[in-house]
Picture 1 (cartoon, rainbow over the protein chains, first blue to last red):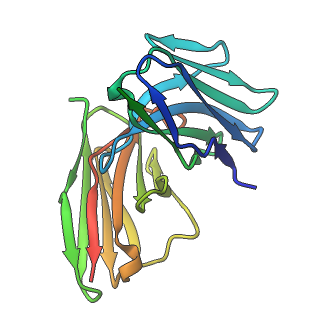
Picture 2: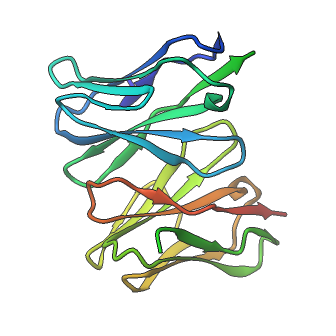
Length: 109
Length: 112
C-alpha cells in the first residue's frame, strides 16, 4: 500500500462546478499536511496548508481528519484557471515528505 | 526575497560528464531539499538538509551527491549519470523541516 494515496482522476468539470479531492495517508505519525498545485512543466506551488480545524481561502477549503487519516480539498465555483494537477503532501515527524500521485483537474467552459 | 532560484534551467550531459546543479534561497529557511520528478509522476524526495544535517533517501544512487556550502545554498553534484536519470530536478526550501516548502523552477536534465 502506498504511503499517500490520492483520487486517481482525472476530473473534468464545467466552469462553476464544485469539485472535491481526497487523499489518504498510512503513517499515523504524520505531522503536517499540504495541498500543492502543479501546472504542466512547472514547479509545484503551495496552495494551502491543512489544519485539524479546517481552513478556507476564498473558493478553496481544506480539511484534515486524523482519525480516518485523510485530507480533502474542496474547490467551489471552478474557474478555467483552476485546471492543473493537485498534489497532497504529507510530512512525518522525521522530516520525510511524501507526495501523492496527483489528481488532474480540467475545468471546461 | 521570497523565491528559490535554480541554475541552470536546462542541462544536457553525457554519461561521462560531471556537472552540478545549484539552488539558492534568501528567505532564511533552515531546510532545503532536492527532488526528482519524472513526467506524469509526483516529485520524489532525494535529499534533505536541515540545520546542517543531511538526510538521504537510501534509494538514491551514489552518482548523485548533495553539498550544502551554507544555509542559503544547495548544490547537487552529478557524475556518471544514466539516461534514466533524465528528469526535472526540483529544489525546495522551508523555514523548518515540517513546514511549507517553496519550490524553485527546476532544472530539466537530459542524459545522453
